[in-house]
Length: 341
Image (cartoon, rainbow, N blue to C red; front, side, top):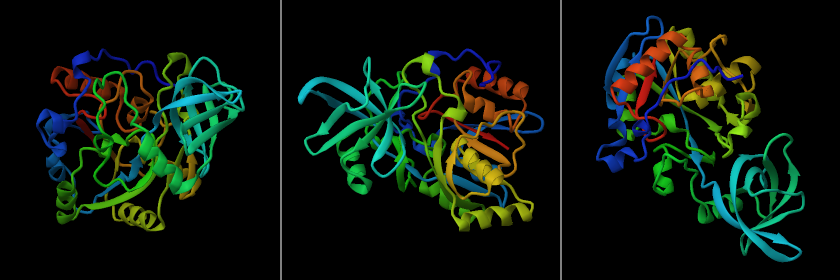
């Protein structure tokens, strides 16, 4: 159950609707608020100064999942004829040719067929219980299917984004493994220059994959809990060894984003380097790997705030968010950054 006490008023003007590049600044020049885990001390800086706040030997772990276009305008086929045009939002990959998806229409039945393009169709083979999600089986699979998605779709965007920005704006510079339906946004502020600066200073950089699912089902009655939001992850054996060596040396593992925390802590519990996670992390969760987190600013009552309360007390977190609002920090995927360490 999401903690409803992590609530606050967020003025509309602090919802970042423009990518930093469209505001006239580099992606790594967004603002950064630093929070001390133990005492709640707050500092303000710019994100490209991150190397000054980390130590030699620390390990920064990023999510290199690549965002795919997940929103499609399709035709629904009935009795061999086109019945209506609807919107389909991909939610999560199940197999090489099967996805959970949100069909934006009044009803969906098993057997419904959707025409994405003359050469791509999908059939409803199941309905996920107690959700509006359908299970779609596509006529293509693997890289052929992904290529069609990239050709036909557009990125997920929410109501605070008032312009259809190109998919490139929803990618991290290091994204390499397609599969996320929403951008793993904590890594967006990193540039290659910043990553190389970290490494030159003796700060380690490594990557995992966690393919993010659809976080909002367009109707508040269908709110997904973290336990219901299953996401596919993969950690390499090499990354595992670097984590173990870093911890053994008394250095810190810094997770870039809640997705990375979720993957790392799932591995810590299960020992599985690959799989699906539905881990819910809150103030009562004993973090075993992540010593700090780099993340964006999260909306009121979001489950991501529950995860942050595993790093820092709710009191310190809410005080910091009040300060961030007073200072005019920007929220969401195109907004500013928060380092908790």
